[in-house]
Length: 153
Image (cartoon, rainbow, N blue to C red; front, side, top):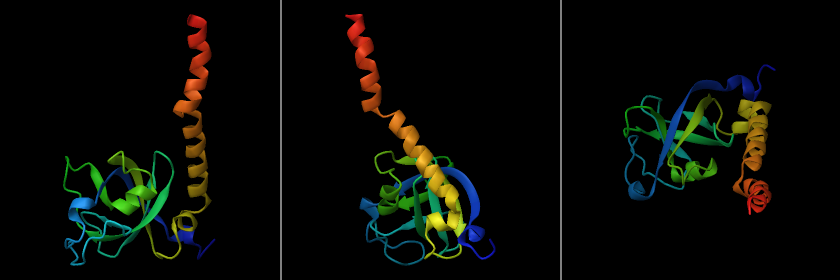
């Protein structure tokens, strides 16, 4: 498989991601460009500006490709690895959550996309997460709970 996208992805680590957006939109980032909450960018404490990452949610398996253009995150006790733009956070389903566990994968080519860069494993993780979420959804729990509740009366 030499030369495939999967060979060029390197797992940098797992940790927490947060997101930022509305209040900083249009302000300068650490690399000098204007922050665009609708762009697929992120802040990291040490990675070089321009580094392309696949960020994969450990909750639902969704992935998003981002480019590092800022420094941070600085909130919390240092347990957060990355701050995502609002658009990137929406892509992996974390806007309402604020903080989410993720994996960070460095990729060589931004045009590869996350699924080819991470190989078929990314697609399998996404399918497993969707299956687990469907089984644990409130609607399926409510359907199971109704007959029990009805028997209690």
